[in-house]
Length: 378
Image (tube, rainbow, N blue to C red; front, side):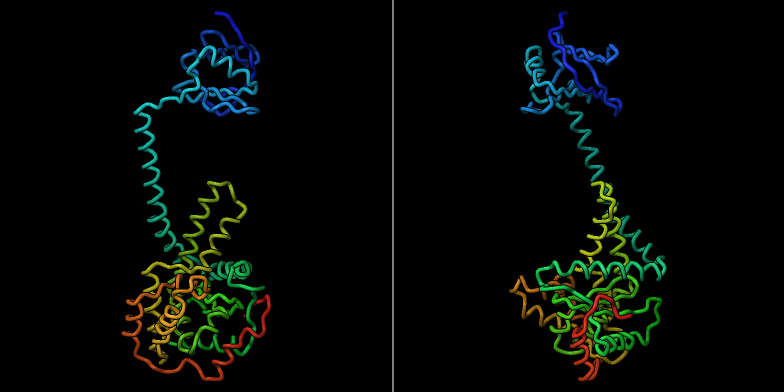
């Protein structure tokens, strides 16, 4: 056997992760790979040599041995001509055995099945257990942090024309907090209901862990009666009582943590983005929405407030804006999808017909955002 070419390269033996600097002798029968001290590491027959990637000008050449994961990386492009001389078919695609395909398909299917179980079964179950056992002080901290992130991200939405702040009009804030206390007057809970109004044009309302319920200025301006606001507020309180926000944020965090691990992002960016996106969309399951509806009607009936305001509010928004896909009102409709079944349910269960507040209180609430600031009213 005569040696025709000599090259330097990096050798991955397919058994360990550590590459080695090697010398490569190309002969008429194949390749001989030696370490820098002259130790023979491998001999590759010519008929087993493959070019694992199409050679590109200015880039290293990747060479492999068929049927193994061993690889050589050679910077000298002349090695391509040397390989083609002794192994004219080296550039062909490596054949994959039928058994390998079947085995690969099996493990891919198994991995997909395991992921489905984790995301669809284990994470939801675990999130419910975690939400039930999370101390109220922790929920409050999570809710406060999430609300601050929402305030920061809202100005980037198309619906907003400037900075979004907390609404600080004292009379309006007091009216909203009094309404929440009235709704909860016959119900005992560990979660203190804390109401906030923010100066966003977006028509939305959402609940966060720690008893936080947030209404936007856009929502207040879109409402035509205090009973509509009372219905929306009672619905969001229902989400708080059933710990829906905490459950969803735990699910979002679990998924985001897995994504962070996959892409190597442990700076928190993915986690923050996940929590904030959920808060803005407030997307719950159909079962969670039904639970919140039932609880809302229970509260409204107990204190004598007309519960049909909630149904009227959604119906009016759907009628007025269903063709306007760019209108920010649709954010609330899409995150709390009001079906005919849900509206019929609300009307059928409503027994009260009283007012939510006085005319003067309604005026104060509507103007709550005349004063704004970067600190929420406590």
